[in-house]
Length: 411
Image (cartoon, helix red, strand yellow):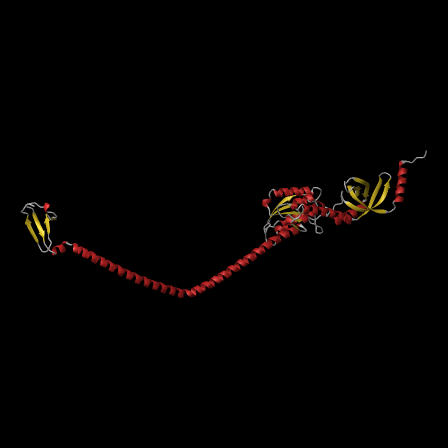
């Protein structure tokens, strides 16, 4: 009976595969289980059902060190994504069969534009979801403080970008004072999203102490930007109650986080320049107001001074007119008082004459002159004969002289 060893069979399979697939082929697939060992990259290519994401195909793949060290930086620089699992890729492969490892795909080239298009589709899907939820532009609709001096900074404590930002603020040309507090967070790697969200939660608990939030990182590989194309991170930033300014050190592309933030600067230093410029704009506006107020005050003072000069020149004439008017009024008042006094004196004179006539007519002397007399007893007038008795001495007062007599008869 004829038979083959396993290695012989594998050799035959290898030759048949080589004959059937002599060329290289562009393959569209998703990366999975990407790992690097001794500079070689080992991975799996998978295909999933677009409806239920069930696995429909799988193949082992590898990129040898010399090729991987060229393709990886090219891919990451072009797409801004780290070459990792879960990417839709378009790769050129040769079909190979190894006697020990079996069927595999040897990658010799990659087209990053395909992945870039897929990433852009995913990014647009996140932005569309944020817009449908009505939160995409919420942070942009906030009002930037006129003096953004109290700054919550979310960054890595060891990042060069943070140091550049802090130094640029501290040494600004206008001498403005800024108050910064660092809320440390990871700015690259798988934990970037959760770390930044945790830092935002800490800022929120102290939000009354700050004017704005700054999220910054230094330069570094563009592949590290994948964490900033996160729905959860974007949703948290979009709905944050303080304006958020980003400077994540990537000049070429905007991330989803950049789209939802109040303002996007290219670098941490550019963020510092933005804040300094805001302070300078406010300072310039205040100086303009000061100039207008000063000019207006000077105009008012000049106008008032002119009015005062006019009043000063008119003052002698006004004073003379006032004095003449007062003198005329005094004369009129003097005349009125004089007439009133004279009338009062005349009236009093008439009243005195009337009283004098009354007193004269009422005087005993006047009555005696008419022939009447007054009989006195003990110096008191006798008004009735009953007051007299026989032998009383009485005195009769006449108009001229007195008569003393004794009552001789019974009354």
